[in-house]
Amino acid sequence: MKKPFRLLAYPKVLATFAAKAIHVMSAIDIIRGILIYMYGKDHNPPHLHIKDRGNWFVITIKDRMVEGKGSAKTIQIVNEYIDQHEMRLLELWEKAQRGERIEKVQR
Image 1 (tube, rainbow, N blue to C red):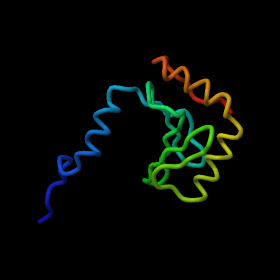
Image 2 (image 1 turned 180 degrees about the horizontal axis):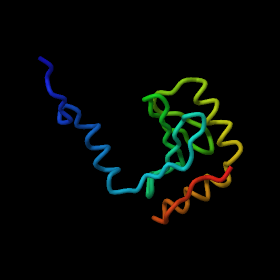
Image 3 (image 1 turned 180 degrees about the vertical axis):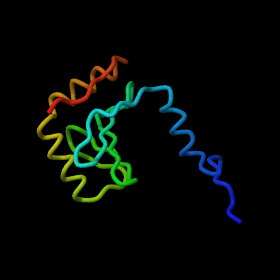
């Protein structure tokens, strides 16, 4: 018999999701099945949250530091995406920090 899954066994994960629940997360784009998110009123430096095939990672917009787990191919695709849209991403970051609604990146 399988044991039931308990979030309480993972307090750091639960605390992270609870903290983010008060902020709006918006998917700003999807490229090749890679989901790109930005949170409202998130911490600096400006960064994106990336989900690909069950892996989540964060990448900073300006210096491209990666935290989390992502394939080299996904990170390369996201870096190319940031190269093409860096100014727009930084504008969206500023709007998100002011608590304004952010829209999807137009390609």
